[in-house]
Amino acid sequence: MLADLLALDVFQFLLVLTRLGAAITGMPGLGGTVVPIRFRLIMALAITLLVVPLVAKTLPPMPGNVPDLIILLFQEIAIGAFLGLVAQAMMAALNLAGTIMAMQSSLTNILANDPITQEQSSLLPGFFANVALVLIFLTDTHHLMLNAVFASYELFRPGTSLPTGDFAHALINTVGESFALGVQLAGPMVIFGLVFNGGLALVNRLMPQMQVFFVAMPAQVLGGLSMVMISLPVLMAWFMRYFDDGLTALGGGR
Image (cartoon, rainbow, N blue to C red; front, top):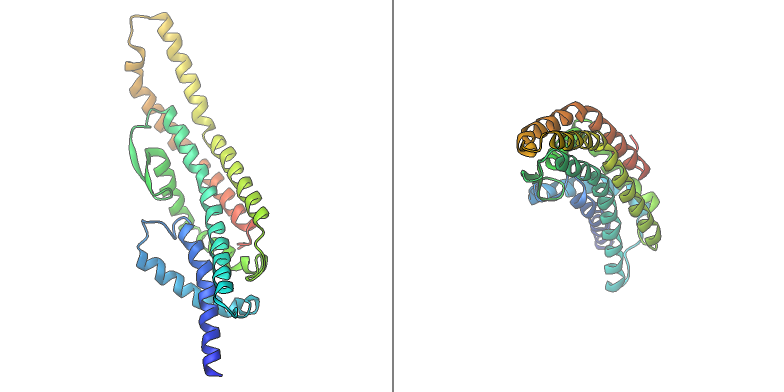
């Protein structure tokens, strides 16, 4: 009897850890190479200990053979990876907006580390990603990410067939919404670039002997950075509302 109880507890713990660990690995601020592996492991184990008693009623019994157990674990990994990918797709809006704004302000050749994509990117996408991560933790939005994982046990019960069609549809919609939001966030900079470059073209026609682009480069950088600083509060507030609504739709309501 005691052996059966211990086996059941270990199985439930492993099942929850599989989904939770896969989700944390992909979620911004909680996963990624910038977070030490030991910290991620300790965090996943601690949260799993808290979640197991709450979701124990939704967990299926332990499969009687190894192939069924492996299939069940892979299903949990897929659900956790889906939740992490949705969060990453929403963060992609800032990466797109920053890339467009960097192109308009001639800052594409200045590289910085992006904590979301885990690679070198232009200065503005990395800056926006860092600001977004600070706001996510300051506003306790990271709790919504963890709540979304907890709520997923009601939406996607372990042991049932995966709604792959719904997964693909939700991910495609999230990527489309992020693309549209990224273009909208970069709208002021796009207008600035059109006006500025149009003015340069007019000056070049009026004074052909003047090296217009050489003279205007510092002004373009200064004007672009000024536009970023002016629009940054509204830009980040708009993005945080979008990120909050997206996590709430996944079940991570406050």
